Length: 287
Image (cartoon, rainbow, N blue to C red; front, top):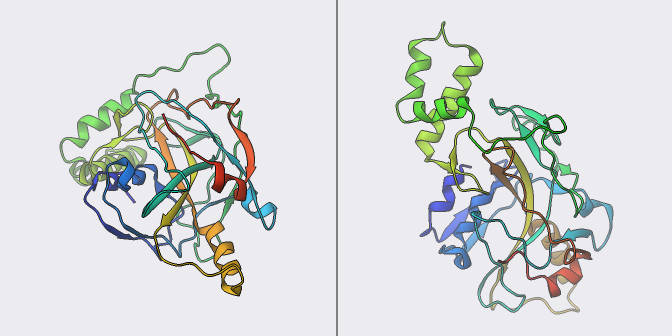
């Protein structure tokens, strides 16, 4: 799913079920009312979403690393979450994330956790990924003492220039003279041209090829005034167990340079809580 979906501020009803999706773009958070969107209905399951490993290690209450308090990221998307007493709508709460993946100028993984191929069989159960420690600080693949630039690479600048024309025509007109990896990048530029520009989720600059990426799990819970099953109902337990899994949504967040990494955490305010405690005390990420 292209990140450009986050620009559909008038979207009211979105159904993404049964699309073999492993994750959603981070920009989808812009569709919710507290972030300027109009979304009222959201259907996400079934999909073989990535799940955090902690969610499978403990039962019945999986321990998750919850970020409480504030985390500032100058220039990044600003998302706020409601308290547990929100009116009709959605409660958005950050839960945990993977370690950061560092990519080269061609978009190939250099450092970080590997993800299963998106073309792999998705008929199996959701794939679990390791969760980064609360105090995890991403370190670029550069040698010690080296400095990573915040400037875009020449590859990136060339692709941006090509994206303003018709990159696919260069591939079809010169099939024998353009290297295969360059053809792949030109087609990627064509895709970006069709779907609209993608912004870095840290510095907001547009890019073609991401240089960093990580998955953040957010709890997305619909709140309405419909009556719920009583505590004595045998269905209540089943619904709760299902909701614990389905409310965790993996969002792919990307940066345009090796300096665009997850914001530093406020480690004094970040603590490890169970899911049950978090639903009562979690203000999420606010600024």
